[in-house]
Image 1 (cartoon, rainbow, N blue to C red):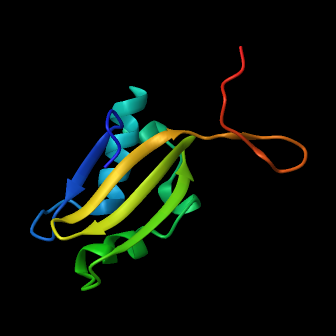
Image 2 (cartoon, rainbow, N blue to C red):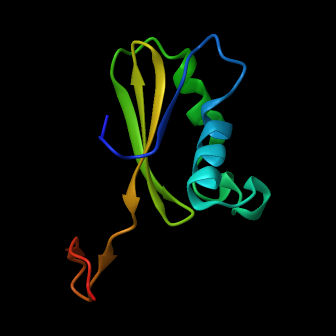
Length: 103
């Protein structure tokens, strides 16, 4: 897990689903109501994310951008760990990623 990054874990026994946990985590981090965010299904298949809780794979993960945040979803022995890594990096015309902030 990345220190200082907002995160949550969804275990297979939780009533919560990873897809809903992502929306809730992003909303809390951004200080908005979840209903104000774009639908998660516009970015990634929520059913596919939710199936990670049922997977028997020991190590499985996906990274994607949602609502301007980089979301890392990893299957762990405790369930599914969801981490908001950082804001989306900007790319220049060549497609190179700019990881330094400009002032």
